[in-house]
Image 1 (cartoon, one colour):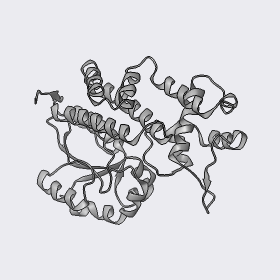
Image 2 (cartoon, helix red, strand yellow; image 1 turned 90 degrees about the vertical axis):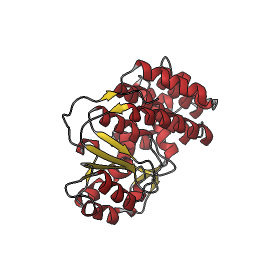
Image 3 (cartoon, rainbow, N blue to C red; image 1 turned 120 degrees about the vertical axis):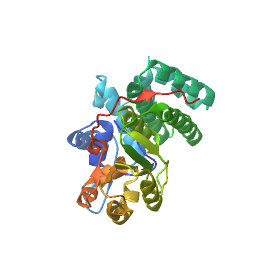
Length: 298
């Protein structure tokens, strides 16, 4: 499951992806148990809040462990949330990390992350530690069980660790220029993807969050990348920028592939593809350079 972002709303197909629940099952739960009450738009489409999606993920996690939704809906909401959190973290390093986040203990969280990073290959570190931790923190924040301060602290520590890993990987393949789209601040999941790409051999130049298109173009003419990868979490932000994104390939060095990722890009996938853009990490081609290696840049 992917992470929940901010206070945006979600359509039912996005909720299905975020929760792992089929749309038919979501509708059945709404009809039979009133698990959540999504808002109906004028076109009759359902939209769900971040809090509703996080609660549905809690129900999904417990049902995945063998419990029945008919029993869970009779249980106090607080109990469902607490037990779902336990299912996600019990017996794993995530439990201690989450406790450190709740205490705003930056040093302990950093130490625990470094400890796991030393034990795991980078791809497993991202898949088994970073992404699940982001899911749990995002869910608790959306449910009002984690303060904004705690979420921000965790993000700063995790992003710092991922940027450190990115800087330590020496790759010899083609250049990939990466940035978060203008008005986009969510780096966590994007950095996991970028570190994995650099391990595969791409020479990743990450320029950070909130980068205007004109600056992407200027950087591309300096670095001459084979791929420009942009991340966007907010569908509305992407929708508002469709016209400038459509123009982007013509402004870049000839032959540059433009790929957009993130929930905002996926939600506008058909429009972006019609504009001649690629969507999703799978659109970045495989390469076969010499294997990347880690270097000590302390």
